[in-house]
Length: 271
Image (cartoon, rainbow, N blue to C red; front, side):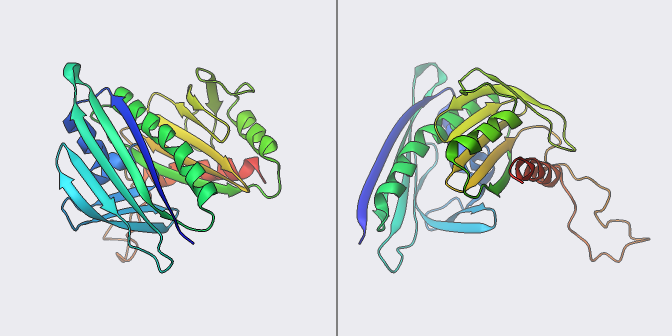
């Protein structure tokens, strides 16, 4: 049995309407604060797609008014489920912008748990959008994703492992300093900007790092703003015509290396 739902959120952002539009209505902009790797075909009828760990979800763009309004809707499943998203932008004096988000649709049998997760998630995502626009204006982030199973460990034990791995105090509070050394990457030093019962976010000089722990799993969604985050490693790209057959085109990137390093770090916490 399906259940209708609607979640409405509003946030004041330290950016112009044009900057906010770039952040919510382009693939690279969405990559800089939301989950996964994103694509958006900028037209009514175009496709809005998000890929998380190889799982791709698509929606159809139903409204596209640059600088004002963006809306999309997923297809309706056989059991009647769908999700719709609407973003409304309004400029304010002083260079700020009000963004209103309406997330609605139909949920399935476990609708209460799913609704609660969505309701808790949106304030955090809009906080990350504000952090992005306030601290990394004019830059786009490279998304990095990692996940690890935690088995039957209690939630408190899982959180404590993350806390130790990031050298954080317990309980984790906003303003606390984090430190980690993923193998093969420079040391990560930053400040906690969000902390609740299931996630916390750390902002460094060149990244936003999110750590989310749920039943049986830990997820990381990072946004890297360093200039070389998406740079080609250049060592195994297969571009040397004199020695390579040209069949290997999968060049390793800075994002690939960061994702592998963070995956190793996270897996090691729960091995």
